Image (cartoon, rainbow, N blue to C red; front, side):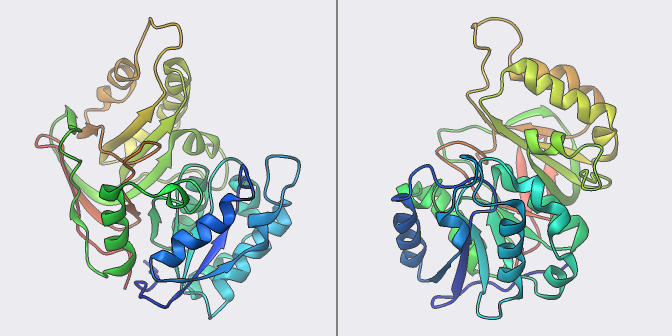
Length: 310
């Protein structure tokens, strides 16, 4: 597994927009200032200021070229995404995975960035960090619990150990047992969108993490069913379900997402937990992807046993 180095004060972070542009341009200076407040210098990518078609931060070629250049740039020590949105899958065929593998750097983001995490892990053997982004969270002042986990993951080359929720948020056991393996996955919509492509998520021998936002239960059902038909639940060792913000039935009746998980995921009898605070929620703990972890679903404990950096 290729790993970037742990960041130190004074290091340079490349800030990019591989998916959608910022909703307002005035958030970009705030995002830069927030990253600088962590002690880093910022090299701002041109995509952070571009708008192509209203929902893309540049053409696929522009976004891919900038990301390739960030990995090839010896002055850049880590790469942080400005935000998610839409568009990351468009650039997957345009990335230089040999260059990325030869120049491993800590890469951070989530949501639409799931497509990049998956491709980097499977095509460049790169460990990455599913975590808060510059405009989505840092610019507005990241919640303290999440900030502490993020700083540890960014700057301390040691395993995160047991991930604890804030006291008011309980991790729930849906199916007991123990499992281990590298963690893969991310946003459910992106995992489903990659099915049947060269970048389909490989869950063999791995812990599968999923989260999403603003998807009604029937849509969650459809995407999980697609994954089930593709064998992803057969092949994983365990399932980690994060936060599901705004995923209630809009009419206030019918199946809940919990019902959907019970109907589709639990029949595979894999150790499964729900509500670890990772995803589109006020608390969004950083989660290393591609490194070894263990899941004790009976006792609702997820332990990160390997550092995401060197």
